[in-house]
Image (cartoon, rainbow, N blue to C red; front, side, top):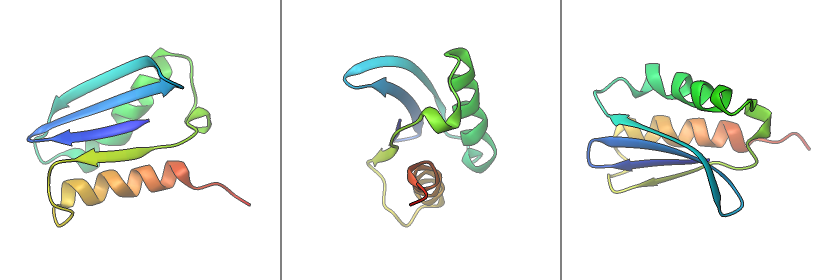
Length: 85
């Protein structure tokens, strides 16, 4: 899964290898903490996937790490990347 933050736009991409299987996007309105997980869940549900089906998550952004938006996105990505040993 890729979470891309560019200017005021948020994009989600689900890929299997190089194949894009689903995408979603919206304009950031300072509501990422309320919206990101809902959007991910909706995107997964449309494809019959579960959160455990996400093999890796990353954030790509053109904004500074000091912004709350990027910190929220990175925290969500880290949660999806967490695997028990």
